[in-house]
Image 1 (tube, rainbow, N blue to C red):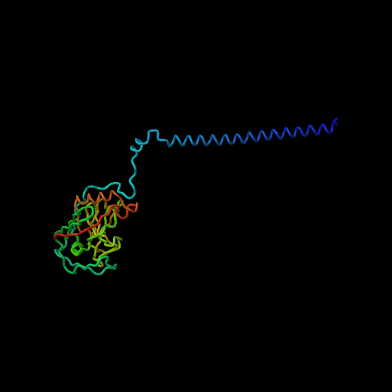
Image 2 (cartoon, rainbow, N blue to C red):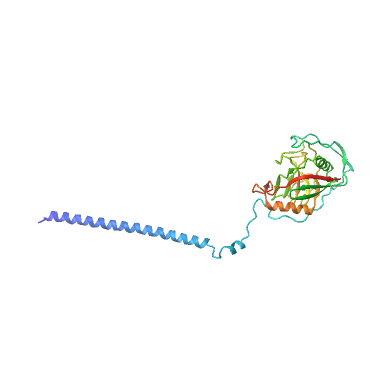
Length: 281
């Protein structure tokens, strides 16, 4: 028969076992509650995402009603009005002196520089670029830039522009198609240069034909067609003619296809290859 000491020890051990069981049950309840809470959070979050993203309209109607933003390499719009005719505020003399010294870069196609001396500053010259997108019709204006017109005519007559590619298209900020470099790198030229024929009143817009350059008095063979906005251009580029409206529509189509760079400045995604350049004096 257990004595008092033994009975107290038995009671103590029984109490400890009860306390341990209660603690274990409490621990399990806490774990279960945490798991249940986590599951509820996941379910609620999933429900919110479902409601926010599910297309209850069936998809097609919603897609049709959304206006996509214009890609960066394509113009958001192209002005359709031709730029006002560019005129010199003070006409030049009937003849001016032109010089064509050797340029800093090597010629990307062998050609003879025009002879230095007096050239006419009167009248116009018609020119046609037969290209992969159709004929581009140009009118070269001697009264604006006689030295530039004289150079362009000389290069065309020597076949310099034949079998070349327009290497640059810009679609934002300014909207131009640039051509005239046989190397198609933007760094090539005829091996000679001539001075700028600019004046402060110069402005640029749809239909303007101008010389590209890499700084003052570095004109060579590269030129650009302004097919849209040219208002951001400073009066640093010699304007020597115009491009007719039907030709500009062909350039518009090229511009709307964008550039191969994915940005607003790069090679046109639709190639513009000049097969021949001819002039009619």
